[in-house]
Length: 105
Image (cartoon, rainbow, N blue to C red; front, side, top):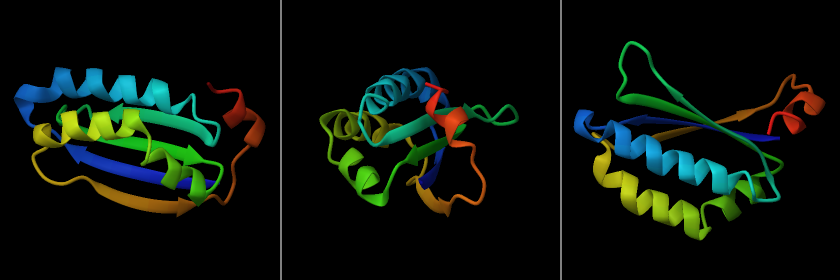
């Protein structure tokens, strides 16, 4: 598995629009053959702070995701809403029950 954690800080007046655009992107991303999970989390203490946890079957699948029309549409819409550039952290899996992941969609 190839796991990407994306941290995003959104302008406070853009939160609802950011959520709408991000949900649309997540739903389309789950239709990609190499996407295992695509989760969006909003911080309770700071509602303008979001975490995306994206799990792909391979690094190549993550690269393909960033080339899709829905990702590029999300990026064009969401980047002006961000307080600062998003950050990405890559993880490797140590323990994941694949059956749970595959059935989580």
